[in-house]
Length: 99
Image 1 (cartoon, rainbow, N blue to C red):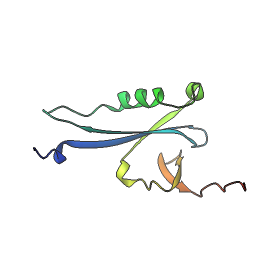
Image 2: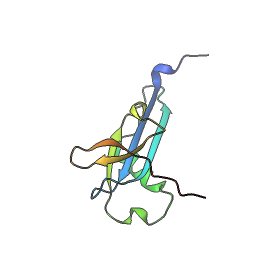
Image 3: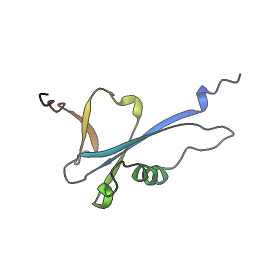
Image 4: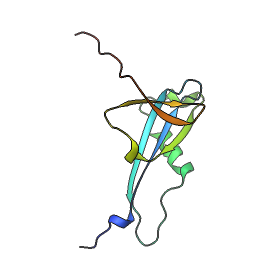
């Protein structure tokens, strides 16, 4: 079997509210680019991310996009976007309600 590790690529686009940095949706793409194919461009990723937002209508307001390297994301953390610096910042996890 051929080693394809050098052809793999993963990228992530964050859809967020540019007013307060609240993340509306994040979409990760993992694909293998064989035969010299190039990964999807950022505009295509943004369009696809909007199509996958679980609550129709949530993206009818103004949204912005942030492209990040998914290997830099702590999957156990909660983030928002610093709208001035256009980068992710870790925030405190919301407290769970008592059952």
